[in-house]
Image (tube, rainbow, N blue to C red; front, side):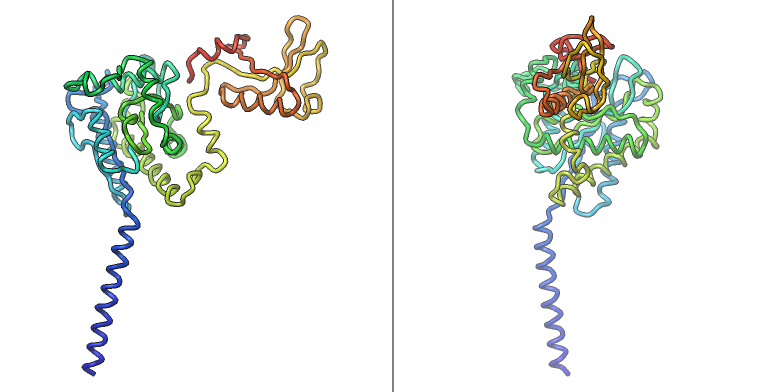
Length: 370
């Protein structure tokens, strides 16, 4: 009997020891998913102006703390904050915090502003600031550099007010662009489908705070403080909770896609289309592929155009001109041009229209995108 008890005790110890080894191995094989949450501005930098009495730095901080609270409910997620109170943090320090933590994700939260009553959400990833509006956002977010001590030396060669400087610096880091775009797309999708916000889409711009991070990184403009209704929404507890939930859910969805080792988790065949459409939509511009010209008015049916659908026709002088496709996205029209040539229209080419009037392609591409 005594021997049986001893054997049982020894067996129990062995099981406990073996279990502890398994737990140690599990922890080693499954390190925490580290998310760095960055509340924009702070301290002597209030952020975007609001005539309604709200401060961007306060709203950004409240949203960040709520996102962190939601994420920390989930096992194996570690949240690091660049700030948890109203203090001034330099841009380079925000990036340094994320890099030092070897973070899996960097999410920076901001509020937008505009001279009009514009409204809606935008999520930025690193890229060439190729539109006037994106240049404005990039310069506004980067100008905090001037509030920092010794900024001439710390940001040598980087001028926040120079489009050339923004573009040059945007070309440096591309490794995480695709993952960043997919996360940004998840965030914007949640804004529009889960809380019925107007999504202005995923944008690309050279923003210092995400330019210097060595991981997928996004900067979320949660709404416009210059829009009265949106300003009050952003400052409300309801608004902050809805925004935070949308962002934290997107982060969890993104994490799941990485763990499944399929970056297409939420997008499948739409992934490349999402990437292609970032910042290539041109305001008030319509692109078409001109495929033929004739003195005869042909019906715009597929059987007259080698099976192609979406054919349109205009009359110029005594000629009818036929076009394939219609889009404001330049990447999309390039694909349609290839489709037309594959179908047999080898001399097809892209033409552009602005407010219904034909303009040169060069002029069209010089206009600002949405």
